[in-house]
Length: 261
Image (tube, rainbow, N blue to C red; front, side):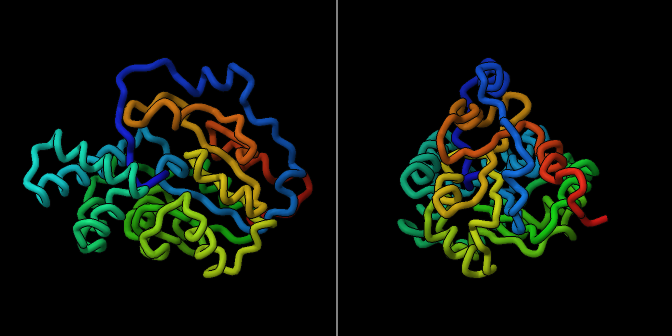
């Protein structure tokens, strides 16, 4: 997910069910992934469900950080936080540009949260373990946060590396330079890679580079995200979409194709 949450808008009809009922469900073929040798996953709201309640905690920590930094009330701090997000892509990038904050201290504070609601996911573990080739987490959050999440999910040992906002020189997805930096660091061939994301805009550059792209949508309405971030997409850069990542990954291995034990 993008390293921000855009804010709740109250109770709304389930946009995922609406979108899929309208014919936006993925039409899957094994052939689409037969060539893939590198599997790249966003973290927040992609590898785990919003039901775990991690992201609202991070968002609240960011608001509190802004409160303390500027001496603002929570409502004013929230407005400033979202101004930075929309102008710079992340609140952190805005604070670095305009207030010269220590990004490492900010990231440590923002991710000082309770992970206990997130549990081991055996279905996801089996599905990720069966993917042939290399596997990475590519997040706009911090390495420590990503590590804590995948450890709780029971999949930490399945990934070759984590690529975080520090590795990206604090330039967040969907900036093209960030994908280029990731590809260069890890020697990834985009034409033989697949990218999994919960925000459609973050799939535009991977698609341009030649990757297979998969939009991971919430299975139930998330009150902490804007409606447009939960809808299915007909954009050309969204190759596939799913509300069940583990089930989708299971279908990427055709019958007879060798996979790890």
